[in-house]
Structure formats: C-alpha cells, structure tokens
Image (tube, rainbow, N blue to C red; front, side, top):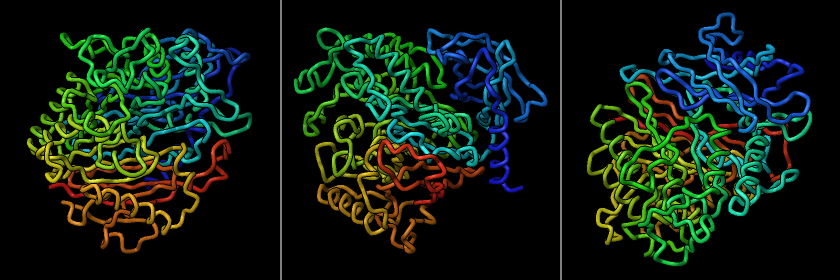
Amino acid sequence: MTARLFWAAAAAALLLAVPAAASGIAFTGVAAGDMSETDAILWTRTADAASGEPASAALTAELSAEPDFRTTLFRYTGASDSARAGIAKIDATGLAGHTRYFYRFVAADGTASPTGRFTTAPLPDDPASVRFAFSGDAHGAWRPYPLMSRFGELGLDFFVFLGDTIYETGSTGSPPAFDPFRDPARALTDYRRKYLENIRPVGAGSAAGLEAMFAAQGNYTLLDNHELGNAQFVSGGAPPGDPPGAGASPSYEPNDVNGSCNFINHTSGFAALMQAYLDFQPVRERRVSAAGDCRSDGTWRLYFAQRWGRNAVFVNVDDRSYRDIQIADTGSRTDNPGRTMLGKTQLDWLEGVLAEAQRRGVLWKIVAISSPIDQAGRFGPSDGPKSWIGGYRAERNGLLKFIADNRIEHVVFLTTDDHFNRVQELRYLADPGDQNSWQPVPGAFTIVAGPIGAVGPDQQKGHEFATVKAASDKLAAQQRTAGIAPIGLRPGFPGLKAVFREGDPDADRLRQPVDFYSSDTFNYVTLDIAADGRSLAVETWGTDSYEPNRFPEPSEVAAPRRILGFSVEAN
C-alpha cells in the first residue's frame, strides 16, 4: 500500500469512528497540539446534546495505536468546563517519541468523541524525516474552507495554524464580535462563538469547517491580529491608554517606545481575547517568568522551541503580546532602535535558541512568526506597518544580522497574514544607515502562505498564469525601484533545485519572481525534511479563490493542486 493510499484509508477510518451523540453529552470536535517527544495537549468541547449549550462533563481521554481502539495504551482523566465554553484540555504524558497515536474522549455515560491522531516529536538524536504544513487566515465568510477538507490524506507529522485562526468581523449569518474595550465579558462570549463557528458546519447538512483539519494531525498555533480584535489590543506592549484598554494614540511619537510598566497586555480587554484563544486552541497554558522585565513577566507564554529529530527544530514565536504600538508611519519613526516586536526576554531567547541549534548541528531551523519579515513589507500589496520591515525595522535588522554574523545556516521563516503566497530570500542592512548595504542572510528565506479563506485572492478575477505573472512582475518592479532584491529566490541561491511553477514550463531554468508567487489562490504549504537532513522540499497547494459568503461545499470546489515548488539542499 502506498503512503497516500494508507493515509486515505486512515482518514476514512477516522470518519467511520465518529459516533452518534447520545442523549446526554455531545462533542464538538477534537484536537491535539504542542507535541513534544513525550506528551501532547488533547482538546475537545462538550455540550448538552439537547440544547447545544456548553456543558461540564467528566471525561476520559484514551490513546491507541489503531483508529478502532482495539487496544487502549493510555487513559487520562479530566473534565470539560461549562464556564469555559465546555472545553477540556488534558496533557497526555508518558508517551514514546516519534510515535503515531489515535485518541478520543469518552464521557461517563459512554458517549465517545470523534477520533483524532497526532505524532510525537522524534528524539533529538533520531535521524527522522519530518513532513509538515502551514497556513492561516480563516475568515468566517469563506467557510467551510474546502481547501482543508482532505487534510487526513496528507500524512503530516504536524500542521502550523499560523495566525488569524478566526476573524472578529461579520459574515452572513454571523454578526461581528463585540468591542472588547467596551465590554470584555460580552466580547469573550462573541469571540468564543467565532472560534466555534469556524469548527462547525455553516448550516444543517453542511460540511464541518476546520473540525477535520484539527483532528487529522497534531497542531501548533500562533496568535495574530484578528484574535486580538485588529485594533489597539494587537500591540500587547503598547501603552494601555486612558482609561486602561482604550489604547494610546499611534500618531503621538512618544508612544512609539513604551518604557513604562503599563501595557495593553495587562488590560481586561486583552485578557478576554487571550482567554478565548486559549479556550479554543490546543495549546499549553503556562506563564512567563522574567524577573526585571515587566513587559513579559507573568504573561501567557506562547513562544517555545521543539526539536523534531536530529535535523530540525521548530520555533514558535509570539510577535503580538509584546510589540510596541503599531504606527501608520513606515518612515524614519520605525527606525527607532528602541522599538521592539518581541520584547527583550523573547528576543534574547530566540537568538539563543538559533545559536544553540547551530552549535548542535541542527541543519534546519524552522521559525514561525505571524507577521512577514521579508523585504516586501513596505512595497506593493502588503500589510505595511504591522510587518517587521514596515514597523519594527531596527529589531528586524538586528535579528537577521545576528543570524548572519553567527553563521546560523538554513533558517526558514514561515508566516501568513498578507493573503498571498510568496517566497523570498532574506536580506539585511550591513550598515543600517546605508540603504546600499543590503546583504543576504546566508541560506535564509521566508515563505508567506495562505489564506485558508479570506479577502485578497478573490479580488483577482483571472486565474491565468499571465495574470498572476503580471501581478508578480509589478511587485518585483516596485522592489527593484526601492533598491531591494525582488521576491523569489535568486537563480544562484545555494542548494536551490527543481523549481516548479504551474503554467511555467521553464521555471527551473528562469527562476523568475512568478515562480515563487501565487496571488489568486487559497493555499497551504507543505515542507518535507529528508531523514538525513540534506534536503528541504517545499510545495504550495491551493484552489482558485471564490467570493465571500458563498459557503461552498467541498464537492463544489476542485481538490487542491500543486501551484509551485522547489527544494533546497543543505551545505
């Protein structure tokens, strides 16, 4: 049996394993996340089967090597909490490394949840291959996200749900969430509703949203702007304003750097939005301990690093909870060396993780960030001020220079947020005062993926290769005019092999900007690291975009197709 057939059969087995709800407790999906070599966080939600209202229930989480649970390897007890929208989280501990487990939850009356699966991380000395994917930006107007309906067939070790996992804005049948500053408690209820809507079917008889995706493999999740209201709360390190939570003025230059110990991340509105995120994502709940750093100390710790065998480390970064205020000016104010995206505690930690990985011979350093770090952030269709180069230039340059100066090789940054897919080699200014001193970070590049379903790709009405090429050429020209290298990997990028672009038979020979660009698709990116670590294969898979509030069934949308791809051989 081929690998694809195996995973298709396993996916079918999972669907068959979903039981009908009994008359007491009903389950709304399952998820596993934050996998290490020995444990994983298991998540589910319970509701009263008759009313659908959140319900508390005693639960047992069961783990097995088979989807039919002929043998139960582990049992863990816990409970869901109606006060937390009916969610339960159980830390499944004592597991074997690099092992695939099937899991489910069982209520006291015998009602069982749907079945999910996850894989634990390989041990640090294990020469294991690693296969994973990432995407983000799931706006409710594009539910039920047909792009993600066949994730069980991909055979992933893990998926990175990289930000904007919900949108607070309205869509047909779903009003916008309430303002968290005006009423944090009401906002908490509304944001929980938005998370739940993204999992469940749009209507009776419709396909579920992201429920199958969450169950198909283990997951890592990032926080971005829409989980935080897309207003003042998106900058956790900004001044809280007066009254606290109102937000400070982004036009008042003294607010650009917050040197006080008063932060948005200490307000009740921010706390409500973080609570909704923690409730509905399978993430660990732990606090930062950083004596002397009031920006970070005591906050929820969402950043971490996890080895995936001998040749890879996955690094999850939180660039929302600590950043200084987002300002509209992308000019000289954003060059202020005091401005921070990560906060000192997290930045020092990140640089230490990368340096230690290089020292230990880990070939691939995969860094997930929720805001683009490439040079496109100030030019063309991008999110400008909230990107690293558009709003936090000195810290970006310092981080990339640290990587270059310390010869930290094969750093790959993953991000979403811009709603179009691109790949770009990373460069920094050797002299921040000299715009002619751009230098490549050796072997480093970034991939921007997505959206899963959100505005942007639907605005490009043509899906022909020539239309997409015109858009990529326009962006590349803007970048060249600005004196920076255009999108893509240069033809001589070290180790670059087998470049593929749908519609371009000469992609590997030309290696032009369009060969690393897709602006008209909803998409995700898969990455495969070989067991010996010598190669990384990258592929974008996508579907043509469609209009909002159409709510198409998966059968109405073509299966994801390969849009672009390439591989990089390690030194």
